[in-house]
Structures are given as structure tokens and as C-alpha cells.
Image 1 (tube, rainbow, N blue to C red):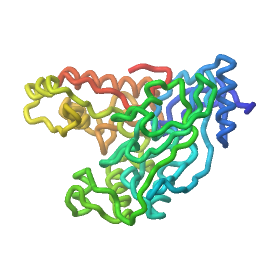
Image 2 (image 1 turned 45 degrees about the horizontal axis):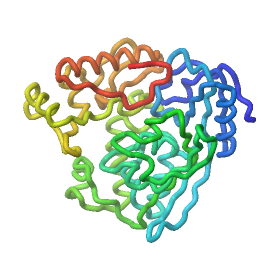
Image 3 (image 1 turned 120 degrees about the vertical axis):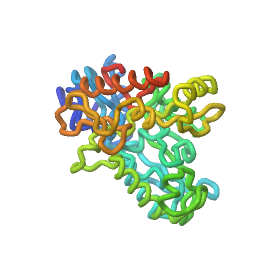
Amino acid sequence: MVVGSEGVRLAPYTTLRLGGPAGRFVEVAAEAELVAAVAHADREGEPVLVLGGGSNVVVSDAGFPGTVVRVASRGVEFGRDGDRVLVTAQAGEDWDALVSRCVEEGLSGLECLSGIPGLVGATPVQNVGAYGQEIAQTVASVRVFDRRSGEIIIMSGTECGFSYRHSIFKADKDRYVVLAVGYSLTRSAESGPLRYQELATLLGVAADDRVPLGAARSAVLSLRRGKGMVLDETDPDTRSVGSFFTNPVLTPPQAAELELRAPGFPRWPAGEGVKVPAAWLIEQAGYPKGYSRGRARISGKHPLALTNPHGEATAAELLELAREVRDGVAEKFGVRLINEPVLIGMEL
């Protein structure tokens, strides 16, 4: 059994720098240790929080009463997947470091996901996506510990139930622990077709064009830095979880209702409905960049990021700001925003 420590504050292990103490804190450096720590807590009837880079969680000021298992497993393997390359990374690998390595190796498929903080294990849970790419496009397999059966299994990308910022791992969050992820990538010096107009414009090409992998990565990092979405200890706007709300996907009747309230509102197709930029809704509802409530504030660079700029806010203050924004958007537009990060010990 992996021995842990009691009363460890979780704030230093999250990008928001928020969160009280853990009942027990265990750091694991290998897959076997991760499985053993979770299985032990399950046998003891203790609640379990598996923590990676802490970039997509808001932990309450009271902390977490059970066992917090911090994942630090390492290892990357390269293999063949037909005419593609299969890159399998342990859950504790740093995500952006993996993207950088794949770009350097001439492997296309992850380049537009550059600069996203966190670890590999979180990427299939949220179906992480940005700038026209998402994990669902490249995940070939996910190795997981099934806490219900006590077995280690390998799930195909199809079995992961991916949808917009969602997966089976998020839907059944207390069942699966991600151990490793396999990504099927193309050996190419060029990016995939650029699906995001802002990125294509910055690179001076048309939508669906391809550019050198390094150019795509550099441009994405530039865009993210401009929005405070690349971790930087010197930039208080990056003390956040990135986008706090997902972009709402509206049905045709909901879109028609919003058109009455906001004629010509920005949108793009999403299945049978439309997706609306949450950032636009937030600003139009009266919450500009830099808006604050107590010691928490909206980023000065992007209205979707809620920040703890000076490291002095509480989780309760951040949630108060989130509720104010959510309720203000609902009152003005009739659209309810949904939080993207996982809330631990709190509800929005």
C-alpha cells in the first residue's frame, strides 16, 4: 500500500491556487501504484479524488475529506497503427510536453492542442479541444482501471462516448481511472486542415489549408498567451482553469428564442443546432474583461476565464462570481451556461 500524508493543502496543486486540505494525500509515480492507491481507498470505503495537473478543478475551501491520489506516472511509447503512428503516454505525462514532442517528431494531429495545461490522463475525460481539434479525433485507446469490476481494461476511442467536452469517463466519473492514452497520429511535416478561422487568419492562410507543424504550434501558443490561457507565473490572468463555461449548444427552438432577444447573434453549426460563443454572451450580459467580485475576477484578457489573480481569493468567492455571471446571462438571454471544470465539494 502507498502511504500518504494527512492534511496536505490542495491549493498549490491546482492552477487556481484554491482548495483546502486533503484527508489523505498520496502521490503515485507508476501505474501499479495508482491502481493500488485507488483500490485501497475503495476497500476502506473512502471517497477518492484522482488529481492530475489541477488545471480543470475547483476545490472547495473545506478541501476533500477522503483520499487524494496525485498522478505522477511517466512514460511515452511509439508504435505502429497501420500507416499511422500510435503514441501511448502514461496518465501523469505533461500534456503540452507531449504535444511539443509529437510536433518535433513530425507527427500531426495534436498541434492545435498546444499550450493546454494539465496531464495526459485528463484529456479523454473532458474530450479536450481547441482551435478546431479535439481529442476524440485521435484517441485510439484508453487504458483504465475499472473500479466497479476491479479490472484493468483497454477501451477503444469509439467506446469512450466522446461528445463536446464530454465522455463516458465524465458521465460515470466514479467508475474509471485513466492510466494511459493511445493517440493515433499521422506522420507528416504539415498540420491537419486548419478548421478555426482565427488561427488560419493569423497564419495568413485559408480555412482548411495546412501549414508546417511548428508554425501551427507557435500560432496556437501565441493566440493562447494573448488570452491568458498559457500558464505563466508572472501573469495573474493565467491563475485560472482556462474557460470556466462551455459554449452552449442550442436546439433550433432555443436558437429562435435567442434570435428574438439578440438578433444576429454569433453562431456556428453544431449538429442539428447551433453553438454560441459563451464569451460573447458573458460580455453582452454586462460582464466585461476585468470585472471582479471580491478577490475573484474575470480575466483581463478573456471573458471566459475566471481568475484568482493575486492568490488571495477563496473558492467560495470564485463560485459567487461564476453564479453572478451564469445568472446574468440567463436573465438577459434565456441561455444557461454550464461550468467546464469539475467542482469538488461545491455546486454552482
